[in-house]
Amino acid sequence: MTSKIEFNCLPTAIGSMPQTDPKEACSLVAKYLPDLPAWPQLPKRSQLENMYAQFSEGFPGVALEGAKVYVERTTDFDSQMEQLYNAASEDNTDNYGTSAEYAAGLHAFLALKERHPSMVKGQITGPITWGLCVTDREQRGILYDDLLVEALAKFLRLKAMWQESFLSQISPNTIIFVDEPYLTSLGTAFTAVPNEQVTTLLEVVFSGIKGLNGVHCCGSTDWSLLLKSSTDILSFDAYNYADSLICYPAEVKAFLERGGSIAWGIIPNTEEASAEESVASLYDRLGEAMAPFTRDGITFKQLVAQGLLTPSCTLASMSNEAAVRSLELLAELSARIR
Image (cartoon, rainbow, N blue to C red):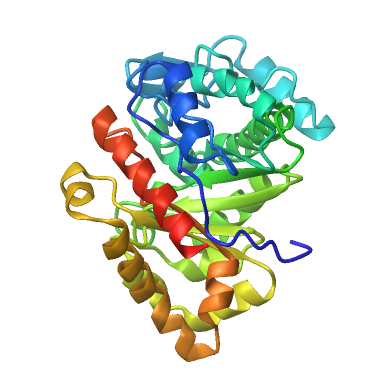
């Protein structure tokens, strides 16, 4: 991070949407998020678009069975691994793109280049989450395999590099979010991952991103790990878990002082909560989420200037109509704040 970026609470999205038509989804993104559009992931369109399968294309020995992703040591596994390591050493992304079959919304997103947005956002599944959900045949996460964990970090780095280059066709200014929902399980009996490994793996992926990078976690986690990393943007569920970030006032202040931004996931992603909220109620809720940090010498002006607004997490679990309402709330709340 070299300089402070002032987003002034522009709206953007986490990624997933409930539509199955990529053109329809991109049209909604363009309508409600014109300044910082995010390409839509469409898991209801195909199982290939769930966040684990979507970025599996090209990984050595990968096999898909429905929504599950496995790694098998096939006869050509060693040669595929050699190819991956060579590509990583040369920053060669040619064989590590994401095709339209796996991400129809990403490829339909290219149509937005005619609108000339000032910045665009992409996203990729992070190494902790991907490494826990992609398994061997014994259903053991490849994060626990010393050979595969190093390979997966290099692989996702290449995926992020390719996506950033792809998105630069729309705008030279890009943000790539690394989505890490499984960081909520750190420190539990279910996830035996040392903090040092979390940081190391994330930094490998960040190192491939030339523009801005962000990390998203939609629950409570050890935010100090992320605030002290090299990430430019911390994205969190401020609707349900605002209190979790309040526990790290010094780290938040230091993060903002070095130019970091916070993406406040203040728009609910359940139909019940969305129906109950209004722009006015969410404005108050966001103010309440920000207020505790002002006691530590951070002004509301700074929080707004170095802030983004997003849904709390994916919109894919909602109906099409409810998702549109969430985007409307998001756009209107951002306009009111700005």
